[in-house]
Length: 283
Length: 168
Image 1 (cartoon, rainbow over the protein chains, first blue to last red):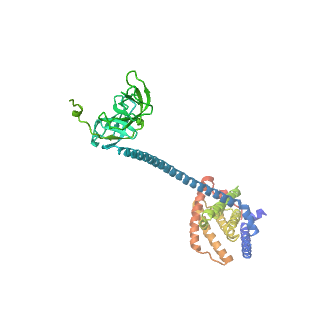
Image 2 (image 1 turned 135 degrees about the vertical axis):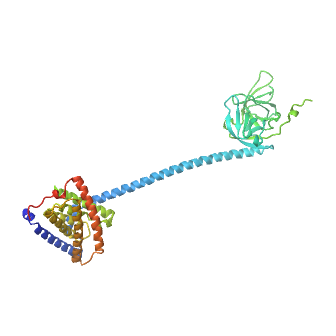
């Protein structure tokens, strides 16, 4: 039969076309009645249905992957943006905190400066050298700002030292804790006067206090205003130890009221200097 | 072996049909992968094979499209038989012959569809001429590209891929 059909392809062709016309006519009739698909059509669909189903599934998965990829790209970009924002906000926060700290200190200094009747120059510490043998700091204001040698330098915490050298825009300050420094001071409670010097270890010692003088731990030491440099009443230190000396005077150890390791802004007091002829006058 | 190739080709055509239908619904109006398959197969000059290929490919296309069941089968069988008939008399080979056969087949296919729809459903296809021209151009272009790809990978002309009938 197959051989016969293969040998008569034109006949087969005509038969097939006729059959297809019948199929079409039947399909048209069933569609009119309402049955949209014939059994034959449904069978062909069933046989080949895995292909469109698979394509659809793969298409959906591809779309999901693509959208997932897009979402991931978006998330990565968003993450980067948020990282940048966090970095910027952190930087801004640090700046604000620093500004807040600066503002607090400046307020403190300004309020403290109002206690003095003399002109005051605010200066920033640009170099701090408290670890060496000579304890000193460098300020960012100099003679152009009216600073002179022997001007006292103070801080809300207490006495800092005195100016020992000036240039146009810088000043060098000898700290009160330097061993070569000395300042006239008094015990606040008893008004007993003495001299405060640096002990070379970051602390202070008070000399010329008689052995019989009344000194107790915690006594506050202020400048006495008798040395011609420092005005009277600036806090200098607190008594932390008293020893009976070998001679007529006590050995008194003091802790400075100012924290020299964290100095940032200080005030230079432009005091009236005693003329040299007055200092050197001998009747 | 040749039927296995045809089946694979049919699955690929159906896959293309599904893909285009899913992502570019209008693309099927301008590209018919089934006719490329049938013409490629019919280029071997086997009349019996061309008839069977046309019927099967057409029925699959009809099953997954909204047309009358058998409409495309009729048109594809007609085209496939004609291409196979010509190739059984004239030994045509190469991309140019395939392209020309495809152009003629697409035009003939569209005309047959037009007549059948007009005859069976008493309605005319809108923008028939324009649609036929665009479909012919796109289907022929892609068809020739597919032919070139197949020639590149299979290293076998469609003429040798099928067996000629021994006699009429």
